[in-house]
Length: 96
Image 1 (cartoon, rainbow, N blue to C red):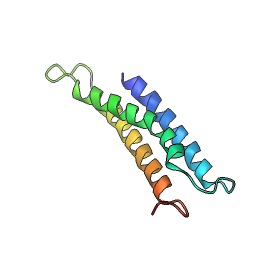
Image 2: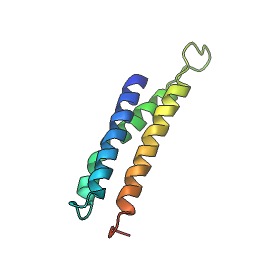
Image 3: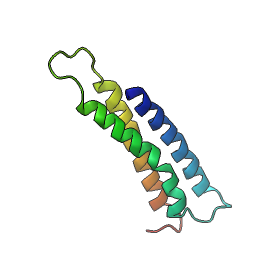
Image 4: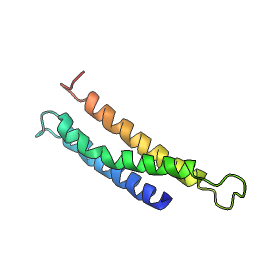
């Protein structure tokens, strides 16, 4: 599950970067919310999987510790989400 969270987090970051570049191009006058929302499912799913892996971690025996890998995937998913939100909100002529 942690590997799947990592794959989705990295794929989400790549999709968010492409969406950000599309919003910054001169040929695209404005990044609409319908276009920006395309990049959200992957980071949200990756964050949910990583959070679930952190919650189901073994307590007493501690044979496997997914804390570092799952928390890094969760951090990457969160940063990707924040990146998409700021890309949408701070665009020239944007909603704010």
